Amino acid sequence: MRSSWKCGMLRSTGAPSRREVVKLGGSLLTLPDWPMHVADLVRERAAKRPVLLVVGGGAIVDGLRTIDAAARQDPRLIHRLAIELTGTTARLVAEAIALPLVMEPARASAAVLDTPRWLACEGRLARLPVGWEVTSDSIAASIAADMHADLLLVKRVPPPDSTHAERLESLVRSGWIDGGFPLAAAGLTRIAWAAPPSVPEPSVCRTAVERGDAGRC
Image (cartoon, rainbow, N blue to C red; front, side, top):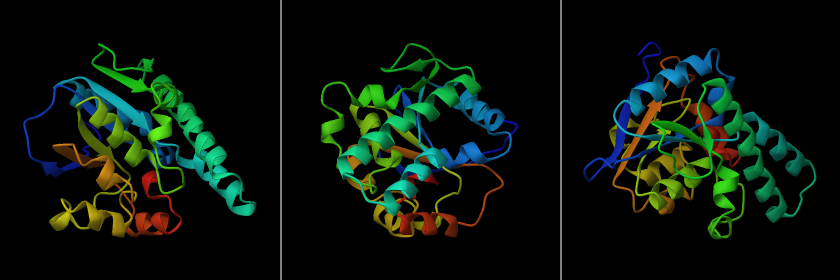
């Protein structure tokens, strides 16, 4: 694989599922040549089983956060708008690496989920807590649980403490995952992570969580 992603496991308590949900952190979309690197990763994962990408909002949602911080709006409105913006990054990734954009799991070996449309069905959006503490981390975990799939968290930085990476609460405290993730991922038996080879220090994520934005990493 040309991009030589770093990979590891956070939880492995059962046999691999037939499908894998891949949460792609939105901040990865600001890295040089990200389409090539993401396509390499997806190609490798999809060679083993079908892959469904869930894309974070990244810099686009950061802009909404800045607007909200300047003059607080109805949290329910901001929550809905933030989720709608992930549809934009999903379309961007789907076009950039030539994958279908779907609202439900497809038969394709790899596809990008239109997260807002998926959440709009069967009352899924109403089941999510409202607030900036809920990011694409928790959303991807919820989707994986709903689909009985394994989860791969693709982030800009690896877990800050690989010796205790299986302890999700410690990853919340360090800012690597959002606060709702342990509950959302409670039913998952296999959770892996991946990060590109050239990354900033893990303190980037600690700074992000102080802003309530762990899932962008």
